[in-house]
Length: 312
Image (cartoon, rainbow, N blue to C red; front, side):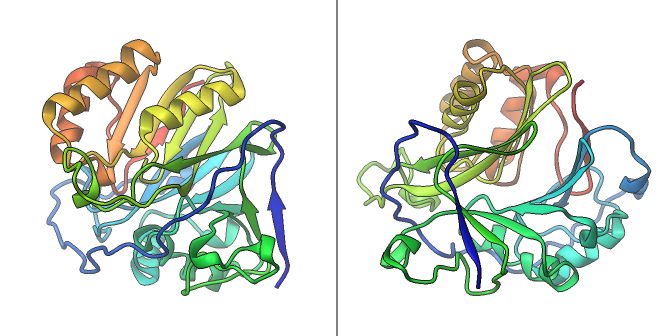
């Protein structure tokens, strides 16, 4: 198995990489009835955009199967990208076909982190596209890391000969940036503040995707934001020197108070000047509602089956 290392940002310090391989996640599809019409085929859409292929919520689900997890199919400047794979290969297959996208066309995929609700669906991607480039965060889990000359696979469910390990910020194609951060928390809700007395395991590695728009701003896509969505935004801005036009994905805010979430949303909007936000997945229903309240008309609806056009 051929593996490569991506480390293209000079001066980026390397963190100690300790993390969990697979998170405990619900594996039962939430068959939620939806009264919305089936969305038009994403293949008919022009410009730069994404469509969510995996999520447990959304207003445009149509004939898709809702399930806990996250995956986004992205068209960007001639590239076809898959960001995360969700919890089930068969559900990812169903949803891709339902929303009119072909994962055999994916040029490269990005895995945000090693939790099962983001990794398992990649089995389907590799069935139809076995030679796809797959970027994964380099993880020192249990000492099995490439620096020691041992083979590393970020999930027991899949492997690819074109896996590239990322341990620092990197521009992998023109305007396509991988943002590398690490988490101060393990990633399970019950280990997060305000439960400060719970033990923590540090430095779960995580990749986010930052895409430059025509105006030079960024669209930032996060899988779970275990590192903190505000820290991911800061790192994206620091690395590229650009402002953030849109941030979307999971913000991992389920265990936090409404006051904490509201302060965070205001920090993103007012202090970090993030112009639009589309919160979903592990943000939690209350968190999504608070982001809608804070961002108002600049809130972007996100969720399964939702197509999000990128700002120019």
